[in-house]
Length: 200
Image (cartoon, rainbow, N blue to C red; front, side, top):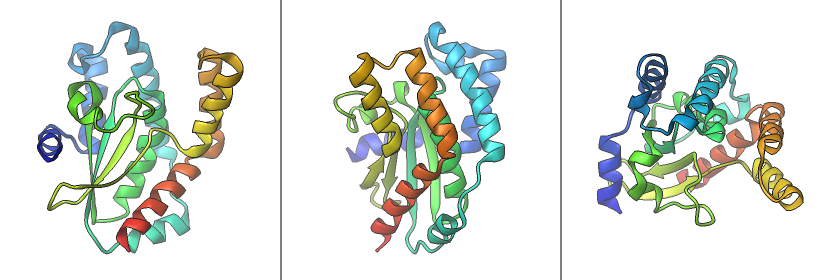
């Protein structure tokens, strides 16, 4: 596992570099994203979401104080893709949290270019993203992981599938309504709680 982690880190990008890469690729050369043409409309929609959330996302005062109290250093390695709607909702919050502490180095990798890594962290047998891996900077050991959705979003999807059989377009609209109403609070709470537990 360590070799896969190290290899993935070598290909990783910082959040600003990731955002610039995706934005420029969508504008000038979508093939650089290495995604199916059918996924491009989702990537374009997510670009709009990310621009908005990067500007408007604010971390709560209590969460900010807790993150700033971390004593150990960590790498956050996030598995993501430009077309993933859940990632577009989660990444700005993860980035804002990471920015609050000099002890967190957040890096991002594309799922489909790192399937060996992704397949170590499946959710119910699926390659669900985003996936946040918390690493020890020295050993590259995975200390814990989070994702692909906060608990409330997981419950929404499970309930919708139980009623409708699958998460169709109407279901996805309802999911993003949940994200918009929650304003990232549950992501923030879950990730902060995980980090405090690790930092003990």
